[in-house]
Length: 100
Image: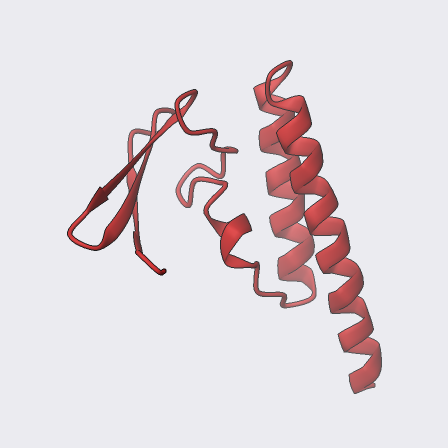
């Protein structure tokens, strides 16, 4: 039973990474499609209780789940040892600890 769950999580992680790659490639042509890919990736990860890797967590807005591209639809700033993302779609902030 346990091995089956781990196998499902590994498969889900591969799928999630693939969906984020698709979101990245389709953003310039169709940003709303990228947002759909992100929502699908989150849903897939939640289904098998998978924790998203840090580099993927920062690629979408925590509030509106839109795919973020710095300079296009988000702003990234560093302030007091925090990385601050500002989403232009929902106009909300996300703060992350700055890690080396």
